[in-house]
Image (cartoon, rainbow, N blue to C red; front, side):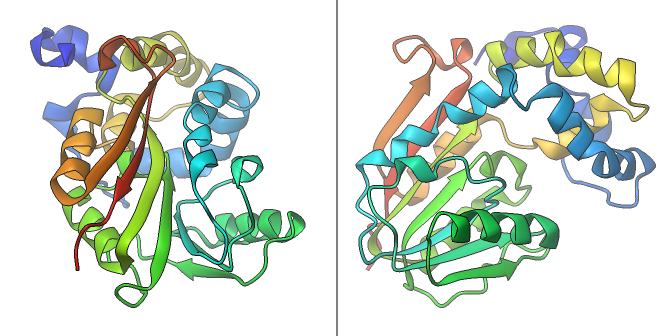
Length: 255
């Protein structure tokens, strides 16, 4: 991607100061605490109903081809679950996994309002990648806008592979973090918003919130799964640097 060739004074405002702050979250850091306290305001003011929300929805349609009938589904970092309209049928069981108990309650309420049955919540640890489910117990794992946040990405994807049944499916999407279009979009939207309304160091928060660039995520998925589909949006025939979302369907070939 183009970011590899950018001078650092250009790279930094687009993708954060990764040389200074690294990629691993320090939960005791004052800037990170401010970010966590102000995240919902940031989301509501800067994304909800705006271009950020549109971008978030780019990848949801990837699941409309999946058969959910009688399936056990695990969704990682479910959030507000805006993709229920793409379900072909209601799964047999639905596990929600997140590190935030309030988000879990909100996600579970949305599913129940949409007539989903057998919904269970799993509170994950913020400093562990283990998924507390039995091996080979899940038919479909969904991960929308979640893999870019996981510092121990390779181990986390290995955990997803472990809980999936043979020939099980991992489907979802990620923002094209590290791509030129994504960096410019941040520079023109969320960065000026944070500068005007927030007091934390955004160059630090960017690094910790999105430690994984999209090319790394794509590579790790291909390493551990059989890739059935990668879809770039909004311009599928252009290189990743000119897109904002990468969605995927992967199959677990392990026996």
